[in-house]
Image 1 (cartoon, rainbow, N blue to C red):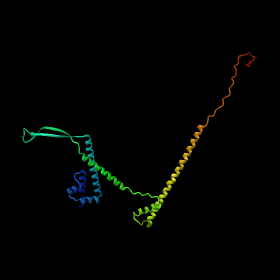
Image 2 (image 1 turned 90 degrees about the vertical axis):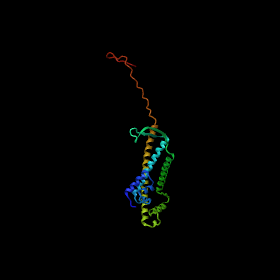
Image 3 (image 1 turned 90 degrees about the horizontal axis):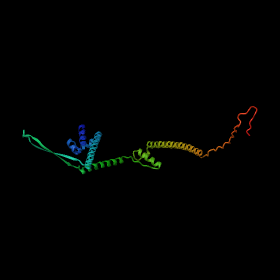
Image 4 (image 1 turned 30 degrees about the vertical axis):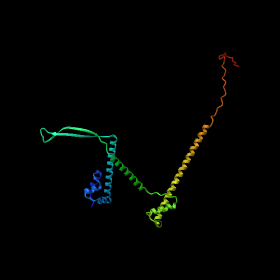
Length: 249
């Protein structure tokens, strides 16, 4: 059957609403299951839309399951109304409400349904983790340089034998190895220069610390006491007549 945009949109909508399974959807829309899977295989946009619809449906189911689990833990009340009708006095052909009774009942959700949805979510996560591990690149570490070179040649030749006999492949691999060698040499040179600068800085700091320690250990210089200065004796006769001198000794 030829691909139809309207039919594809309807399929995505019904999947997201979780009204029917794939087989039932195909019967309702009058297409075969093979047509559905052919569209998924040959139409990337349809495949993406279907996968997104399944994801959204699962998210709604998980959210409802979590709400039900919360109600199970906390409990919820269900209201039930019972209405009694009687014939209308003015118009016996019609009934009127006589009274209404509201009943409240505690109804826990189904534990089995909650566990089913949560277990399905857990299985989906495990399957996704397994797919992610399988998609990780294969890493092989070898110590021998020639073995690594041969593995690179094998990879360059699409993991087929005979790559060592192709001069273009060998030249490309040898060029790549030479570039890697230059990069490693530059990295070693840079690290060596950084180490040299760090050693010089450490040496300068060490010399500064040594000078500071020596300055702290040097004893203070003691100044000799100054010689006492004799003060002149006061003159007992500060005022004398002309021609007289005083003697203080």
